[in-house]
Length: 382
Image (cartoon, rainbow, N blue to C red; front, side):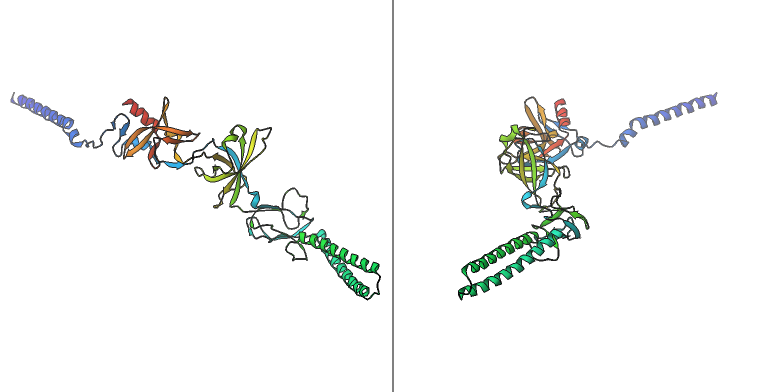
């Protein structure tokens, strides 16, 4: 009987111990192991959101500083980069012949008058022979005229013969001058009478070469043998729609963008506006002067040309930063770390990719460019 009671007491004691152990781990242990929550919750007011440092919402946002840019007067126009013809020479041979030597390669810098290639040309040899013959005939006729003058002054020669000798001297001089001018046209340097040298008419860089040693060339070839240009000066050619003709003028600044350098704009200005509308496309050719000091742009690149409007530059923001509600437009401006204020703005121009703010935003302010719609939804929900 005593053993049975002792067993019952031992079982009760063990049950109490187990109950205490379970209660300790259920109520005491979680309290000891739980880490304190130090992050304060986000705070919302009428148009302001305040997030603590390290809040997960901030990871979904991109905040960028606003920069000023000239306001465009038109949407970007499609165009192309071209050679500036004022500093470009497309060099062809004035005579037929065979190339015997190349004096310059594509990419080389050349000076004005520098030989580009040498030709073995029968036409050049004929011009040189004509010059020698004309000069020899002129010297002979000049000597004959001198003797005729002496005889005429001593009344030995008739006036008719003296005048005939004088006329022959003048004709030979004219023929020598013609042959000399022809030869000088083929050889402006006045040297190298042993062969024809095709020379660069101006200083620049060779961008194209269509000649090889041994190839035959002729004056009526469709393509030039060399293209020499100044790559620091280019043109941007635009086909302007007829309806936008009144929005551009000569001297107006424009910006040029190409796919090779995203986000970079190259300044230029309108040089000339065509006087004729193409009857098929209803467009007018506009030529812009473009500086290319870094030589990043290349002829025949496709480009987007945007004419700038009159007035001072305005803050430029990407369109994803804008929030439109009814007739009004808003931006989220960062006024402090984690503090974002919804500000109403007035746009001066809204393009396909970016807009220009006339009122409500200053240059160098920081705006939310990615995640503005999420912020607006969170603000509306609170």
